[in-house]
Length: 365
Image (cartoon, rainbow, N blue to C red; front, side, top):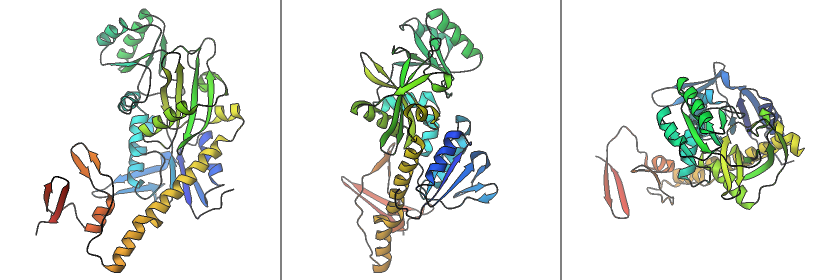
C-alpha cells in the first residue's frame, strides 16, 4: 500500500454500485474519503465567486473530488467543477460534461483532435437526413445525442428502416447522427482510462439478436489487451474531451484500424471487473490519488507557492515567468501567477503596448 500523505477526497455521484466501489477503494489511498449525493449539491452563482453547498452547508475542503453523474445533471456537474477546479484536483474538467454527454460535440472534438472514428453525418431535418440515407452503404447506426448503456443507438439494415427511424425521431423532436457501421461480428472494445494510461480493457460481444455489444444490453465479454496504437488512441480520446477518468469504446475496422465510437464519463465497472477478475475500481482509485497528490504538490508546495513566498520575503519588484501562452480565439490568456504578481484588477484600466515579440502592460496612471 502507498504511504499516505494527508489527503482528503470525495466521490460525488448518484450512488451507483461502481461509485460505491470506487469510494471504498479510495479509502486505501486517501486519509479521509466522503461519498456525497449529487442530488444534494447546490452551486450558488454570485457576482464574483461560486459557492458550493452540500445539504445546506458549505462544502468541506478536499484535495480531490471525483464527480460522476448522468447527462441530466451536466449543468450541476459543470458548475461544480468550474467552481472548484483551481484549488481541487478533479479528473473531469468543466467542459468534459458538455462534450462527453453530447454525441454531436464528442464527434466534433474527435474530428478537431484527429481521433480516428467511423464516418458520420449530422442532419437538421428529416428531409436532409433522407438525402444522406440515399448515399450511404448499409447497414448504418443512428444515434441520438444523449444516452448511456447502449440506449439511443439504433441499427438500420436498409434505407426503408433508416427512413422510418428518422421520421420517428423527428416527430419526437430528437436530432440524430447517422454513422457508418463497422462490421466486427457484433464486438467492440471497452478501455478504462485513468490518469495517463489504460488501466483495464475487455472485448464485448452482443447477443445474436442484438447489435449493441454493451454489457447492459445483454452482451458478454472476454479479456482483451490493447496494443500500443489502441492505447494511444484511447488516451488521446479521453484527453480530447478533458477527462482523466472515463471509458473509451472502440471497434477495429478491417480497413481503417481502431476507431473510437463512444466515450462514457461515468462508466459502470461491474462488467469489466467480472470478466477480468481484477479490482478495476482500485486501479481508478490509485490513479486519482496519484493525480491529486501531484496537483497538490504543484499548486501548494511546488514552484508556484515557492515563487510567491520568495517574492513576499525579498520584496522583489520584478519576477520572470517562463510559460507557454494559451490562446482563446484571438485573446491571449496569461497564467494566473501573472495577475497574482502584478496585482492587476479586472475593474481598472491599463495601457497595453505591443510590438513583435513583446507586450508591455502598465497601470493607466
